[in-house]
Image 1 (spheres, rainbow, N blue to C red):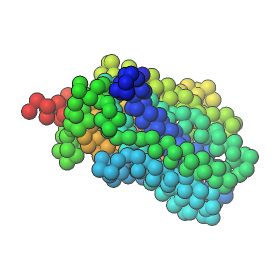
Image 2 (cartoon, helix red, strand yellow):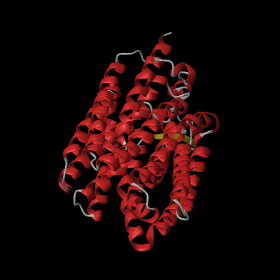
Image 3 (spheres, helix red, strand yellow):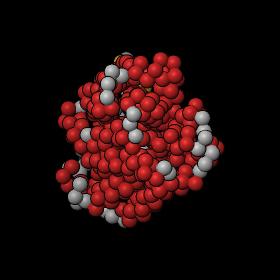
Image 4 (tube, rainbow, N blue to C red):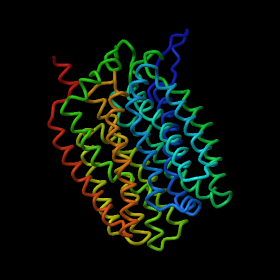
Length: 420
């Protein structure tokens, strides 16, 4: 960990504040996405309570996912203007309220409103601004820092669904939502208060470098949003994310029901989500640093290819151990994808408007999240099989990898701007 010096008689070192921002981002993503991914634990109780089909219940998660990725197009530019801390705190408060209101729902439509709007809007307010703040604190170790920040998603996937299942078994699904809502509000809002946007206000440059060496360019240099979205580089990133996202979030809704349908016990089935969390945490924690060394663009291609291979394993899996193999592999590559994407965006468009650009890019993921899991549920309702949607999910990620390869050959906008 780098330190910075302050002149107080003796030159006493203090920790580089960028790592506190990373820790806050970890907590925000842990709470936000961990709360969202508990949904698979609630599928059967909600079906039983409201007599809804699997496709209809899956739509709750899809709507939430659409909002928490889609709202980045609003929260990102607002964070560039007003600061990430305010947006993150508001978002975490909304997550807590969404869970609290879901606990009091009397119809499936009220669950749609409470869960989808509360968690969807809450994560949508917090996620992109928080990631954008982290990017500004690092240059050389951007991939590693970004990976640590979003590893909260992986740990949340590991911890929160089993916690939700345990709470449902002990106190029922309504009180389980109530407990989760209180935890989300307290931990999420508290962590958000540590977020800061500009390292210079803490007396340092990115990576903990002295201000004299860092200057203002790494934080303030960057392509305007309107210019960025018109570039071939952005178009390629957007297309790859859009196509990939149709399949990426299907496991988070349907893996547990799929396992139960294949005679895996519910207690063991929910562990599969935890295994995605284990793999995802490893992918985010370890692979971000590797990407810094081997090249972040090529690494992104490898993540799409890896997700395609792992989804193909799921398409033919039938027992707990084959599903566990899928879950671990998918988690690693999914985690690497989530970790590296914001760093790739900052590499090619700079840090000045990074939250806004990431927010627009994530509308592609929002569309895929809205359509993919719900479509998989409705296909199951008709065919009573998940083979077709899972196979399509694998094929979509192969296409995304090919698009990412083609995108690597286009000009980097921030490099072009630097030369001009």
